[in-house]
Length: 215
Image (cartoon, rainbow, N blue to C red; front, side, top):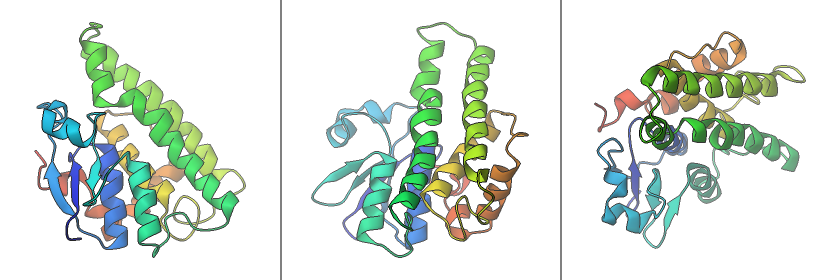
């Protein structure tokens, strides 16, 4: 993908989503690591690209795109095969709703900058912060379990026989939940879906530990 540069961090679940989407589309943009724990995202150079100071960001040559779901939908419009938002309007709305249940409702409460703020300046200890994380991720994923099972299971992926935006959002969130030892016992279907996705090279190659900036 000549002329395109992807700014991300190996452990960012939002960047992880984009990596899966790139892989599903067979695309390989140039990678530019932004080390979130060192504070690269607050540097002037990166803030010129993304004033939010967040990853991911995708420089497409004439514009910089931000927000993982917006980037993924742009990719899907520019490279429609395989479709990440297939089906009719109601199907696509259902996929977006599931993706947003993770990207808008679970992830923001557990973002690195939120967890750091809980510690300093709010003064919570690590055990309390980890408890905060587990509460919100468990509550959110328990709801996602119900979203994919209502009306009956529809396929090995979240909503059918092929990977979609829903799976792209689910897999990174499951990985993060495991990092913090969240209780996923109420989510057997999500665990099965995650295991199925792990067999797909597009998901496996996007894993944090396989990235060039992995620590």
